[in-house]
Every structure is written in C-alpha cells, then in structure tokens.
Image 1 (spheres, rainbow, N blue to C red):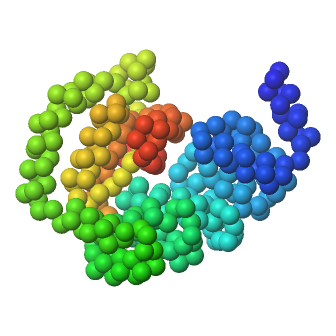
Image 2 (cartoon, rainbow, N blue to C red):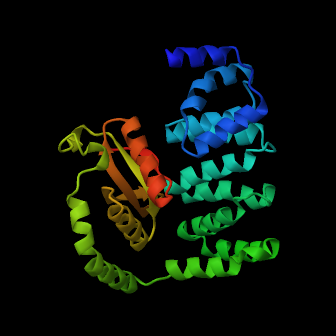
Image 3 (cartoon, rainbow, N blue to C red):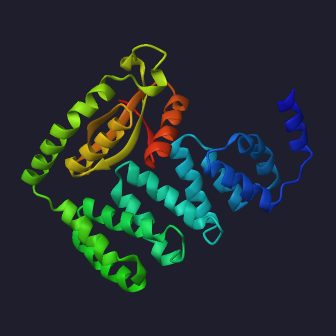
Length: 287
C-alpha cells in the first residue's frame, strides 16, 4: 500500500535538477531504492539529460551496460557536470577488467579535459600504472614529466618512481616476498579459506558447475600484485582466487571472487567488497 502511494506521488511530481542531483548522491552513498523507482519517470521527462544518464549508469547492475551508458554520457555531454565522473567510470571498468590500453585511453582524457576534477590525482596514478603494466614504461615516464609540470602539487615524480619500483621487482624478490607473507598470513587465512562464501552461508555448499558468474577486482601483469590483492580479500572474508587470462599474447593474473548463480547475487557481494575494502569490481561470466 505504501509503495503504491509512493508511486502515485511520483507520477504527479515534476523533478528538478536539484532532485535528480539529490538522487545521484543517495545512490553514491548506497541508497538506491527511491532512485530506482523514480528513474523511469525522470527518463520520460528528461530523455537526454546528462544527469539522468549518469543516474541510469549508477543504477545499472551489469558492468558492461553501465560502461556503455557512461560512454554515451561523455560522447554526448562531455562538458556536463558529470562528464569527468563518466570518464572515470569507464576507465575504472576497463582497468578492473585488465584492459589497460583501453583504460589508459580514457584516463588520458582527464588531464586534458578535466584538469580541475576532484578525480585528477587518482586518474593520473591509474593512467601511469596502466601504461606501465601494458608495456609502455617509456611513455609513462614521459607523461609523468608532463604531469609534474601540469600538477605540481600531486607529487607525480614520487608516484611514478613508486610504480616503477614496484613493477621492476625481480622474480626472485617477488617469490621471496610472497613466501614471507604466506608464512605470516597462513594461520590467519586458514579459517577464512574454510569459510563459505558470505552470500551462500545459509545455502549449503555451492554447486560451482551451475554457477555462471563471478566478480573480478583486478587483472595484473605481475603475479605478486594479484597475490597481494587476493590476500586482502581473503582476510576480509571473501572467497578469492587467481585466474590466468590471455590478452594480446600476454598473461594477466586476474583476481576473481566467488561463484554466483545470478548477477544480483554477485552484485550484493560487489557492494560488500566496495564497503569493506574500497575496491571496485566487475561481474564476469565464468567459462
């Protein structure tokens, strides 16, 4: 009855830009019910509004569909209030998927078109890292010098040195580091490894053969980085694993979490990962 009453009010309500911006803020803070109910009406009222497109992208549960919506927002309304947010959403999708060349193409737009964006520091770091892990280290160094002059307050030189140092670790150092980490962390990991997936805690053992979805939080060219992220996830209570991917004749180490029967199930865990670890994840299909 309350839901019917609320919907009736919606149909008699004219939304303003402030209302739409308010709904966007609600979704960004994890409250999406009212926005989801309002969206169909707002779309009819403002079919090509950039704020409405951004809200629609935030509410879209399928990562690939959301990426297309954000791409459309940028291509049709690049100077809108949410233009920089849309670019970052697309870039982060590609970055989490391990598609670093595509991620760098989108991240390059940030210092060119949105140099005053609140996302600029994260964009610069992700851009430089995307270039490094995709095998364009010299290009990353070149851009770091450009950004150092463009953004003197960001300590770009420190960021590029840290990224290069991390990437340049020898295989022997990587193995030694991971060996030490495993010796320390194994007693902590064991109960978490034996724990069931949080979503399936009351549903018995998961039949993996019938599960078609999983989550991916990153895809790394350096296995150590994948192992490090996996450890963070397992310690936080998530069923993480590493899967080898083959992209452009290169091996990437993807961090996958769980096996899920539906996108909704995966989306719930994605929200938990974001809340606990501030990690973005995308829903992927298990082969």
